[in-house]
Image (cartoon, rainbow over all chains, first blue to last red; front, side, top):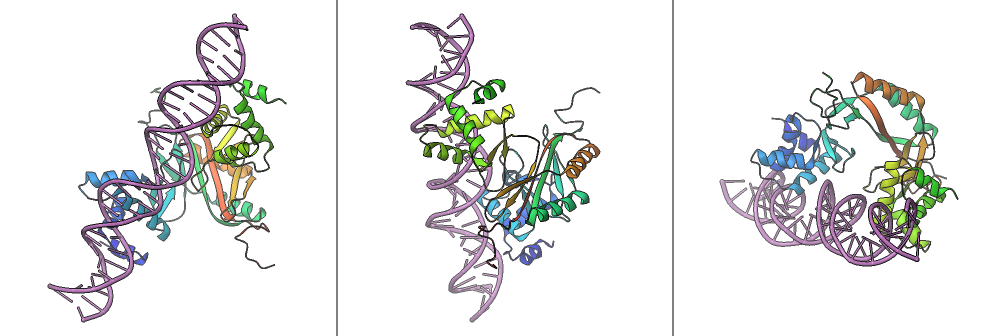
Length: 144
Length: 144
DNA sequence: ATTGCAAATGAGAACGATTATCATTCGTAT
DNA sequence: ATACGAATGATAATCGTTCTCATTTGCAAT
């Protein structure tokens, strides 16, 4: 149980709702969750927590660098626990499955482009959209 | 004046509001406009048009491939007339200025990554965020 | 352990962007 | 010129998210 220190180190008071959200992010199979996903899962687990509190916690975690917010297509932001090095995403347009990748060459090119255009690069978003080949993806042509 | 054919070719009925929106997209200095930008500019020009109609027109233009919708940070989607080859964007976090770029190497890498991960690539979004060096950018350190 | 106070919480109102509803008007094929 | 279905505009509704404010909590100092 080392989560309270995570929050303390991030300059956040260690409260029960925040610990619950953090714990869920750490243990959920799906690494990419909306605020409502988190709210729903916690309620299913019998935890009392308000939706506004979930949003507040996520916003603070983001500011503290514990969590990253992604604005994929489709309205709702998804949140992901920051576990290690930067990566980008590829999303299936049929089933919503999210894979992650990192490409050193692209990162280098991005830095070079920003420099050439006179920008001091802060960050970037890159998301690829396509059809995945998952066996249970509804977009899969049933050809075996 | 060739806009009516543009609409016809896209399978859309040629109506006055749609022509106004299309004309504005073609002639505005800023290539990246929100729906409200368009609504406001048309009203300033004395045109009667409803905000809902602007949204409808833009959504149809997008479906027809005439326009691209970008979900940059900050809530409002921005729309851009499709004028030619694909490109990506770099946005100033201070003044909101948008520059465009295209990088063949990145595009190749994206295709290779999607293939390796078993995705049939449809499209992608890539947006860099940073500080621009514009003389009138409020983020500019006044060092000269 | 108890107290006190600022910070955090929860319920619901408020908000901004976008979409849906529906009576009226327009575009166009006849 | 006519008629019909599609498009429009005003406004209500919706959705995701943030704000408000009365109550509760974490925690530092006793």
